[in-house]
Length: 195
Image (cartoon, rainbow, N blue to C red; front, side, top):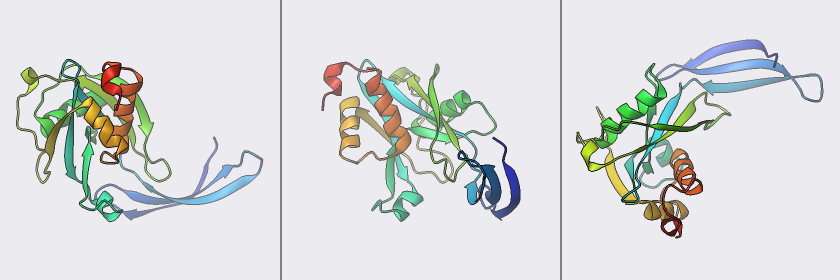
């Protein structure tokens, strides 16, 4: 696609850059269309669903997320899979680091599932999705996050986690995608998936 940039300006750079772009691009019916968009240059991230196939459990975390509070989540708390931004490292390295920081589990082998743009209308971030098995033998730290993070660890049966999705108590997109992938690819026996 041949895009002609007309104008670009920095709007904010408090945490990550927020830029405004004005550009022209060819329209699929012919001609050219001019658009102006604000784009948050967030960088890529990675997420991992920790699961124990023998106990049929998943490890999730619960933490405060200001944007959800500002958009109607009464207490701002969100239940989600471990995740973080890539710090100029590979996605696999990122999920191992985040799992240790958030849960205290030193996971080994991770399996790459897929990648997705989560909010492509205004955010550049692409999230890389993984899964990894956990067991008590891998528990090596306290978890809970670093610095100013306050993260609670939740171990749930897969059946309970899926019920929480259906009830709207788990409403984080990446976590729903991971739990749905587990359901579609039968990580747990079919009797445990019935709710």
